[in-house]
Image (tube, rainbow, N blue to C red; front, side, top):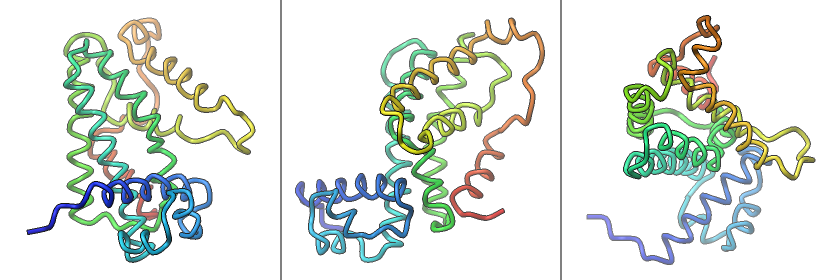
Length: 217
């Protein structure tokens, strides 16, 4: 049986993962681990006690990001709000997690093995439920498929080039509201024609994220 982690040790691990995500997004997965430790406010020895190698830390960041995303989706489902408001709350929470910046930053450094694939599947299920509930309530247009929502959020989590726009995060949330308006049935009626481009189903989304994270063509 695994010994439960002490509260301070658990907190250190969380700080390291949060700092590593920020450093890898800004500087790439080969950034100095000393910088990760500095931003986390721990010593380099503490970092290595939690993650024996760079590869273990990178994998930890990927797993933590998916776990946080699943938590945001489950919280939105349990919030008792109207289905569209629950979907909106999840989308803004996902945007704050910056999943579209974190996972691509690790491209080519993670192997999607059985454990990570199962974690991804458990993350996707509540997101899919949020979309389906809103569609069944007539609050999201019928031609929206699973990939439309996470890819929409992922695109908005990419920072504007140069880091010269201090309002970038607030601007992303503003633009997310515009995208969310486009999910409404009224937007489909106003458009009058079918959506262009591919419909990214769950299966297509899995294949696409395999390519994004694994770095495979």
